[in-house]
Length: 522
Image (cartoon, rainbow, N blue to C red):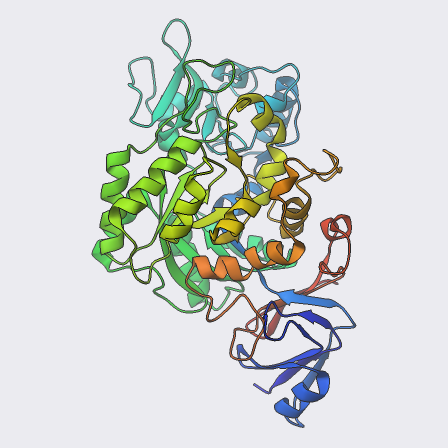
């Protein structure tokens, strides 16, 4: 392959030693030179191929530090209830989707949020039975911590009035003790185990085109072993176009250790990531583990999905095997206990332990995270999506919520992502949310808890170098400098020179991974 020079661009390298450039030379998958066009062309030599970027702004490839790519891929063909605003509207959409399915299948999808419905109502299986009496239906909520199922689905997985609640979960029941069709946390697992598509490789192949079009060049995938197998098939076939850091499900930890998997194992296209462990639930499902009850729910402090003693054992087992730990924690008590558990096992050389979401913490826990080197893997759009929920459910709680500024000031490493399909994977609304703490419509004016806002440069760093550091990959990606992987994007809006509102509407023009154009706007 000849050396290629990408030129005529306003390049923001993310490299403090050389923050701006006009051109970059690529040799194979790596950057050979970054600087003025004259410098770069001299380094590339006379025979280099020239690629004109037409004056576009160029950024390091964006890196999603927390995304469920299999679920996202499947959601592209599933029923989508994120924008419905009533139970009746949800049922109409489910019925329309069911009419398009083949007999004998399941109806998956969902992403419903009954907190936004008018009137507010907790759905149940009887409502689904009214439109799908025979076709089994399993619909995760928007946060993924609750599943709404119909009677056919419950029968097929053997859940009835005699089924006990599992550890770390709840089968919601009516006054007669019958399951209502709402399953929370670990009670969802029997249905989730069925949400496996035989066409996942094809779905991931299609989904990566969507992600490349959004400017994503690397992902930390949080889905299961079926997703891992599908990615390895794409890699073997030469069809993988974006880089994957693949988490291990907690249920597969022992098998992964027996196989000899270690975090960082692999190559620049596919590496083994951390083991994913759940500490609690989610705010929208009223299951995140809090130190004080939710407002108006005097006996509800959420769910400890994995008890503290088990957290310590799991963390130690993984770390001893060379596997980093990424722990889901949203409530302040969950975060406190997870930090305690990381402290109990001590820092492990070469491993970057993480808290996924880290949404609501006690202020005193921020310096503890920093001292232990715990990465805060966070999703900025969760903040602006949850403003009303936080103000209502956590009213009166003295917490550091989505405390990006407090974390950076305390020295906590930040890595940004989307949690798609919970949120849309587009990273530009995430950058907007991080610097404004406002919804896309500009509310609340001045931002929600604006003292926690970031600068655009800080937000970009969290979505590039910060995510790379979380994976132990900062020597290969995250900035545009000689020797680094040639992963970058050209966009129609310069985020460091234009308003956050303009950044919100950014369109990607070209996505380059490994020096090759993998996607280009037509």
